[in-house]
Length: 334
Image (cartoon, rainbow, N blue to C red):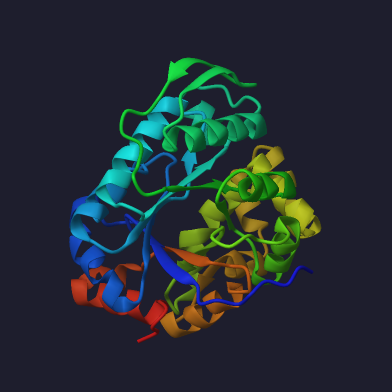
């Protein structure tokens, strides 16, 4: 295994929190730095877009990094992605991480009607276009998956914005580190992190390896399983994640769920997920127990821990309870 220099990781939280609409997050954003968090992340699938939460975060906080994890490369044109990133970089100079990725057909084709064609090549091409555009270069010519007549950003960021890739397997991981500023990976067990690090290889200074960890901070195990099992069955049966876990060596562990899903029985596929998978990929327990398990993902070479927090209903009784839970989960552990 390649050894990396240990460092204190940055900590981020994905917003909006499930169950809380975006306009109700200002009190969270304003307090996150006091709780030890450094980043606000967003994601994009079938709900909130990835960029609006970051724009309001930049307005509400002068210090937090803002990051997408991820934006699909098929659902926006390359120039629109570059323009949007440049605009956010003006709002948060030096604090933007643009996370791009292939996503899954369910988010690209099923709800947007856009073909999920050549995901690796499309991601590579968009990465190359956006990184050049953000440097202020004029871009014209043919890429493998699109052609550009001619484009230059009128106002490229004065301070560089990092561009990272959502990456699950070696090809995309290496692409993120050789041509981008790093990678973000997710839905893996702590013991899988060394395999990710081996695939990445030596990391030049300034590159990012972000690990996204899913957390449901409740000691009610039955509730946690009910709340998280449907999502896990859905995502683990998407082809990119099925291949990811086969590469990680978990194919047999997930085999029955894959077979039930392929047979057209999603409910049976949920039930077939072993509890060790549900508990391992979507952490539950008291906030202190969750934090202890989150810390297992931090290995030398991991630069950022990104939390996706699904809060149970009893936490939403007050703002104080929400902040208290995030504090107990987070880097300060208070």
